[in-house]
Figure (cartoon, rainbow, N blue to C red):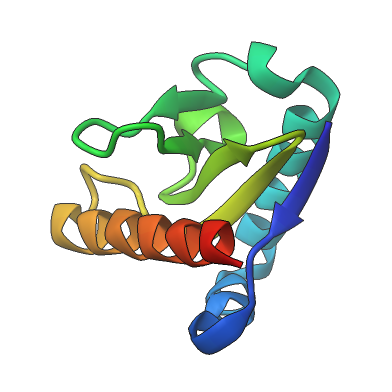
Amino acid sequence: MCVIVCGCGRFCSSTRQRLSLPATERHARLHAVEKLEAFGPLLGFPHSSAVQGFLGLRELRPRAGRSPWRAMYQRVGDVFVIAAIGPEAQVDHRRFAKAARLALARLAELEED
């Protein structure tokens, strides 16, 4: 499976989000993306899970969920699109929900194009 990191249109802060992570967390996220590419929709818990309250959105959980960061993604056709990075919900629920809303907005913009 292919994984695309969204960073298009007026929501180009995606690159800034990724680069703001500490180096160890960026490396862990890249490793999680490699797992998503390898296993696709079969990648399950603890590496991936559904985002409660946000239909169709999933979270990539680096370091089997031990990372304080999550990559919000959704399958669009034959690819997975990572649309936002946010903190783990138990670490900062408000910012987690904000990242999930941002991810859905970015995904909706992609579907419009």
